[in-house]
Amino acid sequence: MRNTDRFRRLAYATALLTSLSFVGAASAEDLVLYTSQPDADAAKTVDAFKAANPGIDVQIFRSGTSELLAKLAAEFTAGSPQPDVLLIADAVSMESLKKDGHLMAYPEAKLDGFDKAAYDPDKTYFGSKLITTGIAYNTKAAERPEHWADLAKPAYKDLLIMPSPLYSGAAAYQLAAFADMPDLGWDYFGKLKDNGVVAVKGNGAVLKSVASGEKAYGILVDFMAMNAKKDGSPIEFVFPSEGVTAVTEPVAIMSTAKHADAAKKFVDFILSDAGQKLALSQGYLPANPAAGRPAWMPEGTKVNIMSVDVGKVVGEIDGAKKKFSEMFGG
Image (cartoon, rainbow, N blue to C red; front, side, top):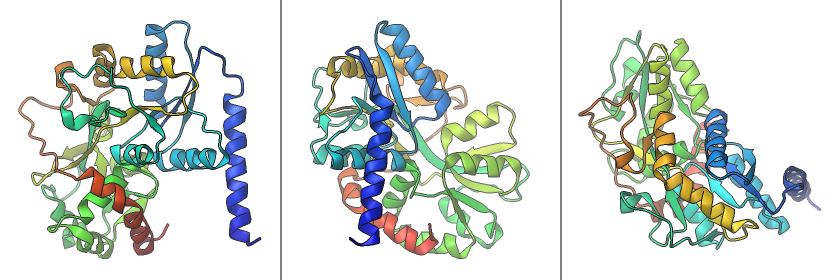
């Protein structure tokens, strides 16, 4: 057996054992949730759901989207997927799972007020919020970026940091979307590389770097920058006028769910007024506009969401990640 095959089998076995030990004590009233939400948000979401649904306990596995999907792939290979419900970063990942038959349709989901673009037409996954990716900068930075193209200018050389699409679902979505746009494309990422951009594991590392002044500029998700600013960090955020990509942090029920009724109640909660107001209180832009706007978004703020063909991105995202890895390493 080749070393690579042995390593792959070992990784699958390790992930499976981890999953089994994690959910081994699940009872008939337990719900198993896999999520890529930040720790604090995941805890608040679970606590609010349990308060609204007494008697249902929740076992949670939290990690970045890419690592979470790798764990799930190992479980599929071993024939023992553990989660009942997923709450992860982007529709692209959900589309891939749907294509392989891993998601359960939930046609009874209540979607009044939600834009049709926020959920799957077949109702296998449902967006919970809008998370855009724009440009953050330290208030002491010399330049004030307005466009994506600004980041490739000489004035920004060696001053830019970005989340790696090999770890961040939002960054992977942006990468595949930008790579397919004539006015950006791979040429844009080549320019960023030549300009000394640093790719790090996630958005949290980007925020820390920009807020501390280690780097003056960062490609970052909106709520992290704006909530940090609200808390006193020396950071500003720009929605480039030509547009931003947005992920919807969708929720979905697994086709293999052992606790499907509890999973439906979790989806109902996320889509409910209470669930959408919870997202708002956590500093996000809710998927249902009726829930309101976060305090960090002034009235009149214009956010141009780029039109992205999700189906096309699904077919191209793995190749885009591979090309990014070859270009930037990692």
